[in-house]
Image (tube, rainbow, N blue to C red):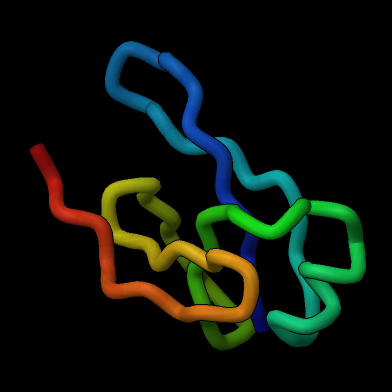
Length: 68
């Protein structure tokens, strides 16, 4: 499964889940545009962090973001 993540200024909680999809292709079809952050995961207990996700950029998978 794939969680599409958005950054928000939450004073420590900087991650918002914008959507959960079966595949990365489903997320692109759901109008998240050509560039968004995502995290692949298995069903169950999960924790999402915007600094520990990948970026989808028009069909090119990019490496994990580096935490500042």
